[in-house]
Image 1: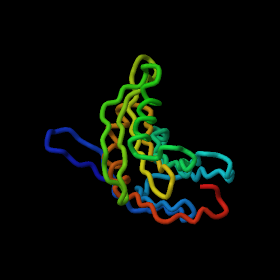
Image 2 (image 1 turned 120 degrees about the horizontal axis):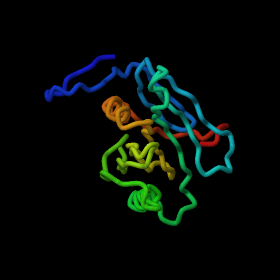
Image 3 (image 1 turned 30 degrees about the vertical axis):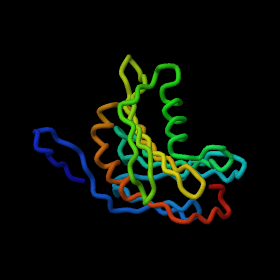
Length: 182
């Protein structure tokens, strides 16, 4: 772990990504800090349209609920499987009921594919807003979703540079989809 200054006398938290998570069945790999841990979340049920693959979080009590999760959604049944249609659907889910507020929504390259990165806020406890980020990547007729879901804006700011570094290491390879429903 190291702490770096960004030149404005504001300290940001960054960590070396020295471990790798690989899931060949789902075709994903990502690097993460050695002082974080992961929990496999794969469900062995091919009838489910969504599969939680893995969740990462800092390995300390205070920040334990700052989660980076990877999900896999089967979108092969959808009539429209473009990034634009996924973006519209995700933005609608976030803002439904007027509770979520989208701060940014942009198309970025991830793992050799176009992806939609959405940063937004939602209501939290005590009238505070929680800041979250999701990235939707389309590949192999599926939607790979990376979600950064911290429990406070402070933890979002603390870990965003580490999470963005993790996302830059995210790779999607031809999945096998054997044994485990991905």
